Length: 477
Image 1: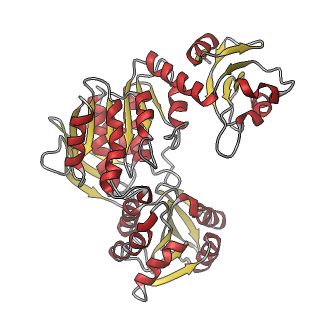
Image 2 (image 1 turned 180 degrees about the vertical axis):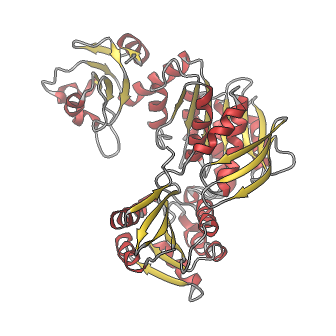
Image 3 (image 1 turned 45 degrees about the vertical axis):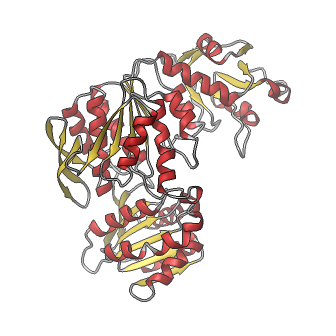
């Protein structure tokens, strides 16, 4: 396996001190001793809950070729004789290595942020670019103060495209990250009421997302959602922050990457879009109106990066929804089956509406019912009661036959729905899982949605553990 970094390159980039019998280089970068690969460098980062230095021996036992450790922690490592690069601060050293990766790279770099759709857009873009060359993209949702530099540091010099997800919960979080990434193209998928408890209004959220424009390279591009209510504000902000050219995607007649026609199906979507001067017909392998919007941004970024648009359009047919983000499972029950839609990874008012639209658009069979299993949307602050109560209308529009709720904030939705739809409330996710296991039947469609901290992933797991899988949305991965 070829080296990702030589030890000399790492030492110089991080201003580190080599210690011990070091290898020529490393084949990967890890910050988790449980997933260290053979030949990796293990960065002993001190996090909120754990200190990586406490797992240095475990990392070596798992296959790490060397450790990156803090000078102040050396005494605590005792008699450990593993190869090391000693630095002042491990996270800062990882950031420095990330900057070095960006400096040596000739790849076209694309950064994505937005209130909804960052990870799905990142995955679509990764898939769309792969036919045109080597793609390096963020793993999972590595979009924060350690995830972005880690993704950068892992980028091979040979990569032709780099795709980075950049997230935030507060102002001033995106700014330092995007200045490391320095994208050629920055995408803001949409502005919506996510993390609303940390902001006064949508304009403050837009301002925080707009920080991504500050890192765009000279003569770069910013892609904005023309259908979003904050488009004009963001466009004006772009002219203040950056010399990048602003382009737009959406259904709007003035969008540069414009949706001309759309057909939403239960397991996919087909669209016709005008990308520059070209009209392209695209099948998107996962369902949902929100994915259609994001696909326009993806196709626009493909064109701006100079990749093959026709190959990218074809590649989008092979995407599938991920665990916790719309993954579908057909599960066996009583000689028949029901459909489970797993949206348990995250939730805010916009993504809740999108998930309920998925439930609405998924056909039921025979005596089947549409069942919405909903948990709290976190980080809503003083707006929490209102935004949960306002979910009543999307629930009605989804034609839900049963609504199963848990979480203290979901009591507001329970009260708002009253007796107009069969509503079940339980204090915990586990209690709700037990209830569901006793009421599901052939033909049902069950959609599970909540913020991650509410633990609705346990409901999904309970159903997957009890009922055999007949078909899975990840079959084409």
